[in-house]
Image (cartoon, rainbow, N blue to C red):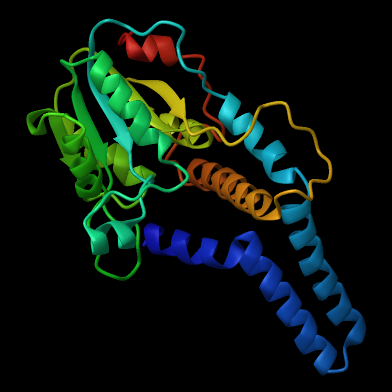
Length: 273
C-alpha cells in the first residue's frame, strides 16, 4: 500500500503535474466567474514553473543531499560485497530491445563495474525489481545482469535481488538475500539518494560504506536565474523535491531513524563497532 500511495502522490505532486493542476484549477475558477481566485491559482502554477525551470533552485536543493556522504579516501581491503541499487535503466526500452538502456543514473553501473574490477573477490549484489505500477517489463536486476555479464563479471559473482520496488524493499530484501555478512560492504547509488539509502540499510542491519555516484550539481551553486537549460533545471528540481519528501515520509513512518541521516557513525558501522 505504501508503494502505491507514494507513486500516486508523486504523480500529482511533482512540479510539472502541480503546475498543470494549479493552472487548470485557475482556469476553471475563472470560468465560474471567480476571476481573482482563478488568477491566484494560475499565478501559483506559473510561479512553480518559473522557479523549477528558470532558476537554480533545483541545484540548491540537491546540493545538501549530494554532499551528505562523501566517498572514503581509502577503502578497506576486505570488501566482500558491492551492493548497487536499481533505478539506473530504462525498463520498457531495455525489455523491448533486449539491451541495457541507461538513464541519468547510469553512473551507478559504471562505478559498480569499476569496483568489481578493484575487488575481484567481492560479490556484486544488484537490488531492483520493477517500480512500475503497470506494464510487463524485465526486472532491473535482470537488465543490469545482462550488461555485467557482457562486461566480464562472472555470473557466479552476481546476486540478483529482483523483487524490490522501492528503497525500503531494496534494504529489507537485500538483508534477507545476503544472510550472514562477512567483510566490508559498499553501497552504490546516486549521491542525492545516499542519505535515505544509508538510513534504510542501517535500519535493516546492513553495515554499508557509502559510495555515492551520479552527481547532479557542482556543490557550489547559489540561487539565481538560469535560462540556458530549463529542462535540466526542471528535472533536477523534481529529483531534489522528491528526495526531500521521501526523507520526511520515511522518518515520520519510522522507516529511518532521522530525517537526514548523517555520516558520523559510518565508520563504526562498517567495522561492526
